[in-house]
Image 1 (cartoon, one colour):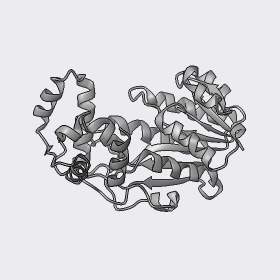
Image 2 (tube, helix red, strand yellow):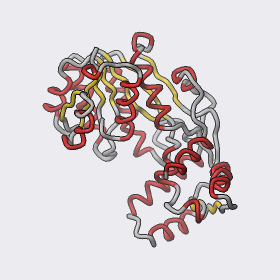
Image 3 (tube, one colour):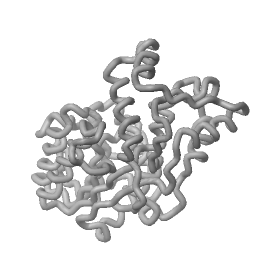
Length: 293
């Protein structure tokens, strides 16, 4: 059995490879794929195979996928061009004889193009179609919005001093941590015979708001912190004043609007059964994050 992880040097890919090792997969059965060889050195040092391929180079993908049985297909982060990239990944996997694909997709409310984050969802919808049409057995994992998104994008660097400033009002989401989602995915890959041509929704059990988050942050900080939810124009002007690029601000606003529209909320989740243990709560995640940082 050989398992190839695309985007290996990214956060999801790195966690996934470490989980494979933790779960007893032999090093010589794991292949880390990336486009930057220097970033793959960390895996070589552990005795893991590495292969170089760019999502934009079909021949490199085809060569990299030779002899691979299972493919953990981590979606590209190049939103504008990833539909074509993903199409080539699936095509190359088919041509190379890959036997199974687990794809990291995205939870969505409708997928009809009306979402504020339709520009992100479209490629996922198309990729799911490419995979199904390929005839390769698959698992499509519709991931929740990462809990990690809060600390990586929505909160500022001085959150424990200044509180939260984000235009989310009382919007809520069934967040799940990147690690929990990766572990559920690895569990699927390692027991792929039980997950043939399946689609799973992987989301958190609870649906917290930023009011819930600020209570935890206040406890961590040892003082009452404010949660300010400005109107969109005020948010844009304020954040732009710190030198934040316009395209990045628009990206954040789009996700705020999507959360408020319930795009990432659901009462149904396959995460508990696939994870096989209690998932990390928002409170525990925040405590752990700020303890490290």
